[in-house]
Image (cartoon, rainbow, N blue to C red; front, side, top):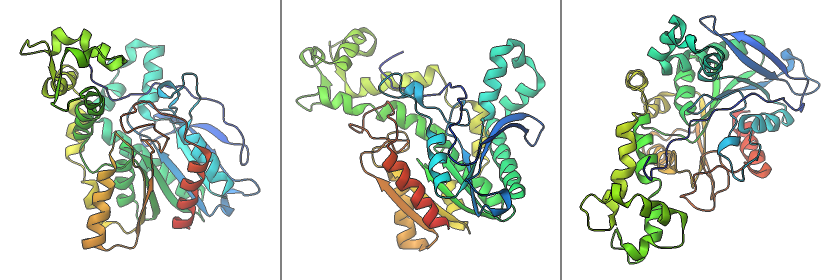
Length: 367
């Protein structure tokens, strides 16, 4: 592995839910094809299902996530519990909004593989691997229909994070009763573009910090700086120094990062094939009849804010839709978490004040 800062695919386990509203309903529900997904339904205190006026269904980012979208393993400092979706859900409950969260199919499949390695040869698992993104869309569509039946008097809203923003927009375009989508970490590009951004460009700030004379070359003196990045690059000099001049150019540095994508193709061919046949998010936004709220960290280096800003520019000057709203969070990352710089790759726990602002904006805009 070269200096590349890779996409983080999270491996997490369910955790106990702290009661905020009524006692949560935690059950295994069979999705559209009969595949069981652990699901948690939370209803605000003093309300029953028929009294709920608004419900939010959560849809995850990339990787095998549980229903909490547990970011603890990639959160600083080590040992910090960071249950991103659960924290958001708790704040929705305090505002009288019900929530529905479910284990991502990739997570349930991972658990099955851990229990029985032979599961990977099953027709069920092979069918999923052949069309991974389509299964994500169909799972969300199933739970949107489920929530619509469970809460007959409620507005149905979807909250999507990262990869989940595209999935949310697709399902909202299919289900005309969806009232709104809230998008955290939106991208309008295929996943291959996001992966390229993260591998090749996300870490360039580290190079520039070492490049004291701004000549786009790290010489021996700069590679001897007292920093972990410099020490790591110096050890990799025999690999990265293609022209054998004893230095690392910016192009060689980017080549080292990009070589990881040559060695490990991300996303899979099957995922790319699925995505190529699905609508472009901006086309869905242009034609959408439901409300769309963008919640974007300004220091998000996985789905940079320029994607959201581009939609805002087009809407402001061309579409002129009043059903779109854009909220930006300064110095915040991919989970609207505080970052020390744009180059930070570790999450921090999202502050309560940010969670409060986020859920308040959703409640106000959608209701």
